[in-house]
Image 1 (tube, rainbow, N blue to C red):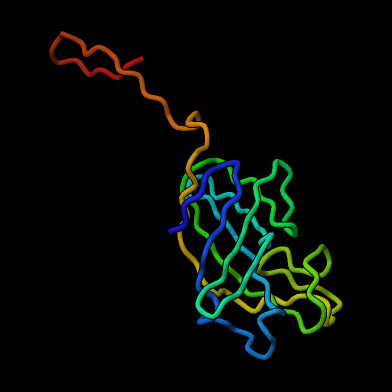
Image 2 (image 1 turned 180 degrees about the horizontal axis):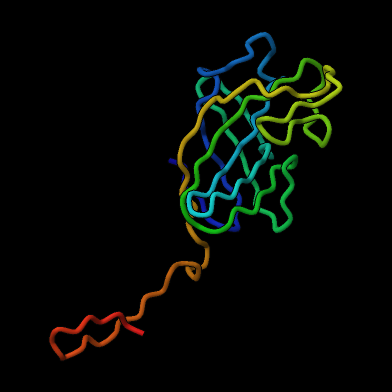
Length: 160
């Protein structure tokens, strides 16, 4: 499970090479599209990592926080705190890798047209898991107030 904090960037280590889909291109022609889905409100966020280093056994991925999200620059605004599901999709290029609008798919279902070597193609799901996003300030959690219990019997007390 990935653990991160709201309003901060984070780095994750994930296994991608063992599940690689397009083995016809070099690792340098691969990028990963990360999809975050909030468990509570089902909101979905996408990001290409700001930094991505593919090793033999793992891939190091860096995601930034920014009040203005940008999928292509790895900037996300994951809120609220809580549990998220993450999915990593392999995107490959035949030609020059350019992670930008019009050259990199924005979602796992996005197909860029017209097809060209400089446009990325989503190959498929590589890995998925859970992420816990802790709150930075401690003000987002539900605050509970203790109330005096009633002294009468046969009385259901709900509080205020």
